[in-house]
Amino acid sequence: MSQHNVTVIRTTASSSNVQHPSPGLVDRGYPRSSGATLKLCQALCLLIAFLCVTFSNWTDYSAYRYFEVVTICFMILIIIFYVVNLFRIYRMLTCVSWPLAELLHYAICTFLLFIGSIVAAVKSSGVGGLVAGSVR
Image 1 (spheres, one colour):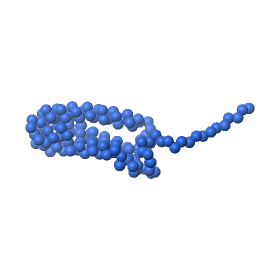
Image 2 (image 1 turned 60 degrees about the horizontal axis):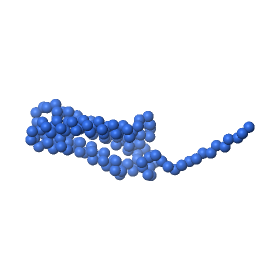
Image 3 (image 1 turned 180 degrees about the vertical axis):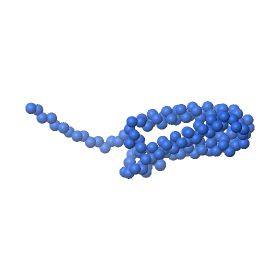
Image 4 (image 1 turned 90 degrees about the vertical axis):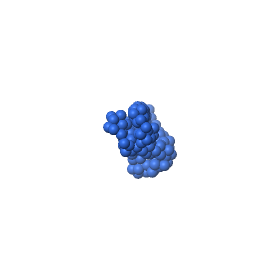
C-alpha cells in the first residue's frame, strides 16, 4: 500500500480590495475609500438634480416625471450598493457577481439618465431650475 502525504498550504493573500479589513459586521475602511466617496458624490449630485427639477415652476410634462423617477431610482440603487459594501453583504451573497451587477447598474442607469436629461433639457425652454437639473 502506498501512503499519500497531504500538505495544507495557507496563504495570506486576499481577493478583497481592502488592504487591512477590519473585523466585525461593518467595514470601517470602506467609507474612507475612493469608491465610497464617489458613490456618495453621485448620490448627492442626483439628489440636487432631482430637487432642481421638482421645485421648478413647470407644467405637468411626463418628460420631467421620467427624469425624476430615473434620478430617484439611480440614487436608491447607489445607496444600496454603498450599504452592500459597507456591511460586507457581498461576502454573504456569493451567488451574485457584485462587480458585474454594479457595472450593469451604471451602464443602464447612465443610458436612462442621459435620455432623461436630453428630453428635460429640450423641453425646459429657459426655466432655470429645469436647465440646472437636466444639466446636473
